[in-house]
Structures are given as C-alpha cells and as structure tokens.
Length: 150
Image 1 (cartoon, rainbow, N blue to C red):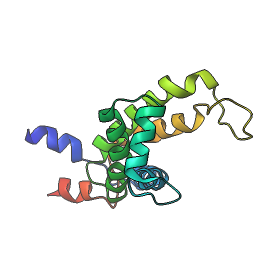
Image 2 (image 1 turned 90 degrees about the vertical axis):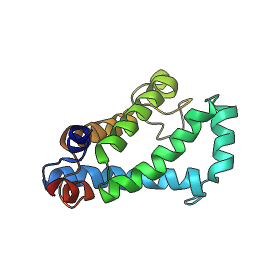
Image 3 (image 1 turned 120 degrees about the vertical axis):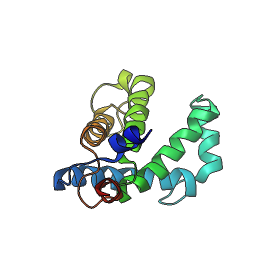
Image 4 (image 1 turned 45 degrees about the vertical axis):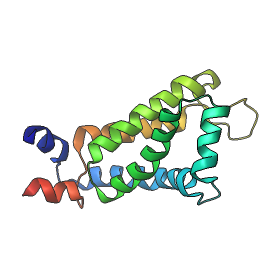
C-alpha cells in the first residue's frame, strides 16, 4: 500500500509539470463549478444531473461522477493533491466524451455554430495535458511534492 501511495504522489519538482497541472485545473474548474454550484452561468447540481441523465441518457452514477471529477478534480489539481489520480479520471472522462458525443462531429470544435455538435479537438488537448500529469506527477509547488519529500 505504501508503495502505491509513493508512486501516486512522487513527482519531479519541475516547473513544466506544474504549469500543465495548473492549466488543466484552471480550465476545468469553471466547468465543474457550473455543474455543481451553478456558478459561471451554470445550472447547479440538480439541473445538471437532470440534463445529463434525461437528455444525454447517462446513468446517474456516471452523471454524478462527471460533476465530481470536474469540480473536486480541478481543485485537487490546482492544489496538487493526488494529481495523477484526478488527471487519470479526467483523461478517462474526456475519452468517454469523445467516444460517445464528439467523434461523429469530426475534429474541429463548433466555432461558428454550423455543425450538429462539437468536435473533439478541445477534449484531445485535455487528455494530452492529463496524461502528462499522470506520467510526470504534480510538479513543483504541489502538496504531492511536499508529501513525497517526507
């Protein structure tokens, strides 16, 4: 168990890994805050759950996980707490988003509203950042680094 915790938290105190982690946390946080708290023009937990389960047809466990991963995962990434875990969760979630809703719309996002849905370019960027964190860890200025030093 101790070995698993060490692997999960150990990180190279590299500024580049820190930038990847902070960027991912900053980009995902508003989405999670919309879904959970209704901030940034969002609808909040109940309405988001309703939308994800009835309109998108997601099982409630998946819908709830999406909300929790985006909100708590982004905060954890910003602080650098268990970043590998949260980055892996985000990579898995966005892989699912691509497979279930974006692949059919092609690569490009729907910048001009002339597609039936969004392409997967944004999701691919999220997955790339997340996998960088999974492989390299939280980087400099993270709780993971403070813990792993001890």
